[in-house]
Amino acid sequence: METLITQYIKHTVPELFIILEHFGGAIARVPEDETAFAGRDADYCLLFGGGTDTSAEMETLGPVIRELGARLAPFGTGRAYINYLDSDQTQSVPGAYGAERFERLQALKRRYDPVNMFRYSQSIT
Image (cartoon, rainbow, N blue to C red; front, side, top):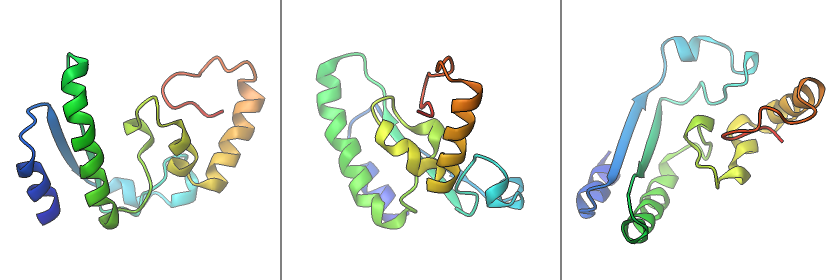
């Protein structure tokens, strides 16, 4: 929390947001291997980012978000929550599910969606 608060206060970019969600409860009661959702053992999910109207604002916000991610990485699981990945983070999709789960999802995708009709957001390739 100290790192999170320090980094947030350090940057005065008004477009920066941080959301900390508590996991546990019903999420943790389902066994890890029963669904496509990975990370049921995590205590929290952290989302940070920003929204801007101009590319000039993004030039300021982008480095702030990357620095925040780098400073907080040692405290995380190294996984990503699939719904929070940006469209340019396709390399993170397999890790969001875990290798074994991702392979199972790919097999289902080949069987039920061979033409890739459902390809938006962070699609299974």
